Image (cartoon, rainbow, N blue to C red; front, side, top):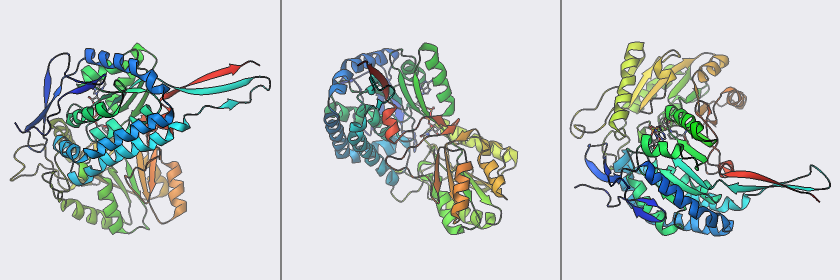
Length: 483
Ligand code: NAD
């Protein structure tokens, strides 16, 4: 069999284990639909085992000094780096994301471990001058067992980078990897087992409706962090509220505007717009600048250049370093993307390039679609309103500052926005008016270590990637010393 990894166990209580169900599911390569590995079909019983293991482990983990926890986290990062090349190949085969930019994912994971390892000393409370006679102070304490539910686009990076803050704060974590790209999680299980004390880091593979739901409904997992679609995010809030009072943070989707003023260079804008769409992961990125809003004076010049660039992207085997775009992650992602092509056609958007499945050698199997650009996309259209999470760039136009503000804010989302202009006044005024949680002025897409990321409106709740992510894995305890 063409398995890309021998690892096929999850991690519970420091042991590499199969599911209590004794069943496995298979994972396929989205480029050719061949089976490339298997993963334990986890159950609610497996989640229960992981919670029990986490509960046994976290008090000793939390009792270590911040320095000691940091040392162990750095060692975890070191061991990940040693197996980076192996992880990269598993991840590219299992996600369909192109290999060159995917090299960054393990690096980001390790940087995040090191960043939060160093920050652990900042888990400080306060003293409060409320009365002069007494001493009032706060402490930060870990929740205990917390969970991270991850999407398919960067499975390993999210499993590590987005649990580092929880570990630094003294929690035990349970990671639920995505079911369409779970294979790197089992390589991660081997590494975490060697690096971390038993039960501090647990991985339970399984479907959202079984393992994901069991995590969300577990009465003793109070802190849940989710990255995924807005529909699932809302379902998680509902389900969590049915069983207990929980702290749920959500990093959800976006329909992110890139607002371009007429004082910009069309070539530079075209390069940035195509880069901002993250075609390297087939547009399957929450931060993709998928609504390009061009001032009418620069619209035609930019559109022409964007279309030329997108049409020249090389689509093919994501293992080939020369390739710009691979296959979509799953049959479901392909169906959803082609559904947007259908409605765009009916609603009168103007197809500029793409919009089809590529044909010919190498594309007989797999979840392929060409990189696509639509022009004349307008606020009433589905392409304007809904996240595709696929390689479709929608282009619209604006005529005045107020028109641009209104159009930028005219969706339910508010994750990111990019503003391009040489006029700093326009840039900052626009940045204040756009209801998005993360903005770039004359930039796109980049995340920066320690800089908070997260969405407004229906794009989410909570901020990750900075110091407040670490604090979000603690509860404050107030002590009044009556003197
Ligand atoms: P998804 O919501 O389908 O699945 C995400 C995870 O949730 C998976 O592990 C899945 O198994 C699990 N899940 C599904 N149903 C569940 C349930 N009822 N209870 C508990 N868990 C459940 O999302 P996806 O298709 O994997 O990812 C795409 C989405 O993720 C897009 O909307 C994208 O914008 C978003 N995303 C957001 C960010 C961000 O930082 N804001 C980053 C990456 C992706």
